[in-house]
Length: 268
Image 1 (cartoon, rainbow, N blue to C red):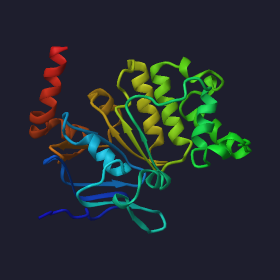
Image 2 (tube, rainbow, N blue to C red):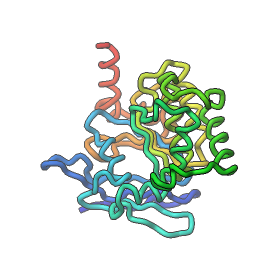
Image 3 (cartoon, rainbow, N blue to C red):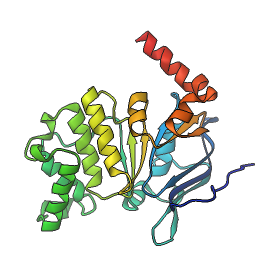
């Protein structure tokens, strides 16, 4: 029987509650009685070994996968709650949940600016987009996003000409153009230079409190830079939750995850 409960004594309202969620594939429990709570405006980092259930967790929040049991609740600012497990992917996206995968998905043959215009128009449909005329509000929104992701000087360049890190920032900008309440970001620092990694951390921290963010990452230096609260997943449930330092020093976390990270670094 599930023993989940909503944590008490919160100063900040919750945006997301995942309660008693289990998901099995061919008898293997990828997610096992998972309980997870995210506050409005929070930046949360999730770590864990391969096979810990991180991607399945993201799939469940975005509706790509439905849980076998349990609830995934998005709390609206007006007090209404929505069970995301009963909604389809596009309906969840419209509720204000955006996801960025590890590999950037951008329109390489379009300009940086046009990539953001196309993101802004996702809700309008193909026909409406063909005859779309840019409003002043849209233009201001895009210029604001360009400055946020530090691509304002590259607005008229083709997206395919950007560096790997800049393509990642553009895709984050494409999500921001839709003004999501919750951003799910998968391994944003993968393949980046040290400078790009640091700037990515600064970008994500600048979004805190304006949006809620869940960031999955393996790079421990990057996590040290951005971490407020770290959740460690292991075998489909939360093994440990807390500050970066408390998680890093936890014997169980060292045994199941950080020890492996060290060995992997030695072997490379």
